[in-house]
Amino acid sequence: MSGFPKEAMRVLKETSRTFYIPITFLQKELKASVASAYLVFRAIDEIEDHEEIGNELKHSLLMQVSELFGQPFDNERYLGILGPVSERMPEVTLKLADWMEACPDAVRPRVADAAREMSEGMAKWAKAGWKIRTREDLDDYTYYVAGLVGVLLSDLWGHYAGEKTDRQLAIGYGRGLQAVNILRNEKEDLDERGVRFVPDGWTRDDLFRYAEDNLAKADEYMKALRSKSVILFCRLPLALAHKTLGALKEGREKMSRDEVVRTVEEVRVEPAKTKGGVGIGGLD
Image 1 (tube, rainbow, N blue to C red):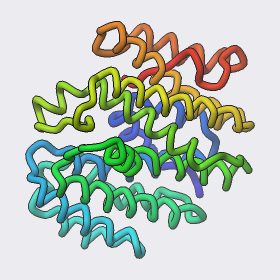
Image 2 (cartoon, helix red, strand yellow):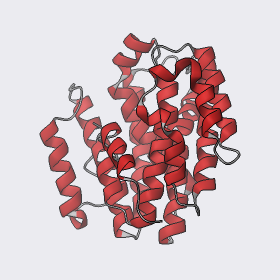
Image 3 (cartoon, rainbow, N blue to C red):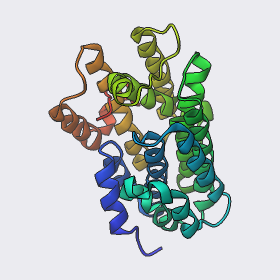
C-alpha cells in the first residue's frame, strides 16, 4: 500500500473531532485500517441518523447496504440503493466505496463483516423506532452502534500489534463512549428526532451509572494493552469520555474547548502519568 489517501484523511478530519487525532497516533497499515473502518462506519451512521428519512426507508436502505458487505463491494449497486436519498447524503456516505478500497487487503473482510453487522443492527433499531424499553434493549443498541467497533479494533490490535484483549471489556469500552454521547445529546435527540435512548423508568442518574459501569470496563481494557501507539489511541477517546461525564454531572452541556485541548496534550505528552483511562475523559 503506497499510503492512505489524503482525501480520506480530509474527510476523516471533517467528520470526527474525537477520533481524527488518535488515529494519527497509529502507524502505517494500522492507521489505514482504523481510519477506513471509521469512515465506513460513519457512512452507515449518517443513514441511520438522518432527520429527513423515515424509519421504514432507513430500515430498507440499511438492510440493502448490509448485503453489499457480504461480497466485493459494488459501488454502482450501492449508489443505486442510495438513489432516492443520495442528494441528502453527506460526502462521507456517498464515498463509502472509496473507504472500503482504502482499507488494507489483509483486514478488509473483517471490516466488511463488522460493517454488515452494524448495518443490520441499525436497520433493526430503525424499524423499531429506537424504542428502548429495558437495559437489555440499551445493551443491544449500544452494541451495534459502538460495542462491535470495540471488538473490531481489538481484532486490528491483535493483527498488527499482537495485542490480546478481552471481548467483553472491548464492548464495554464502546458502550461507555456511546452512553456518554446519549447523555450529552439526550435533549437534542428528543427534540430533533423524537427519540430517547433511555429504558422505561430510568432516571438520568441511572443512565449516568450505566455510563460509569461501562467506562470502568474500558479502564480495565486499557490495562491489557502494551503497544504505545495503541495505548495512545485508546486513551484519548476514553479520557474525553470521563471528562465529559464529569462536565455533565456538573450541569454543563459539554467540555470547554480549552479542556479538550488540555486533555489532548495530557494524553499525547505525558502518557506515563495517566493510569489506563482513569481520571480523564469526555466526547466533543
